[in-house]
Image (cartoon, rainbow, N blue to C red; front, side, top):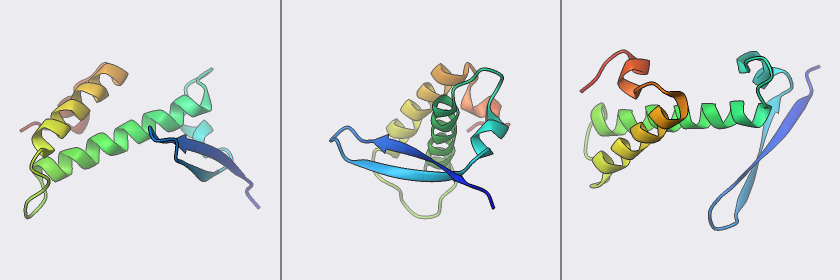
Length: 94
């Protein structure tokens, strides 16, 4: 049976959420010497960047009125963290 590891996410208002992941999962995505919390943070940034892109460019119906600005900022944060443009990581641009 696989054990779990608990990570805690804290919001700007002090609220927090615990997240359990299977032990060893984070290690699969880590580069040698990389801290597990950095790996989890990387995946959170990737997920939010991808989801913001989807809402801004691929969803049916209207998203939030400021989604273009939110998506643009998320793309900047993605590039700052990974050193590559989101459009290059996704393999397409708009």
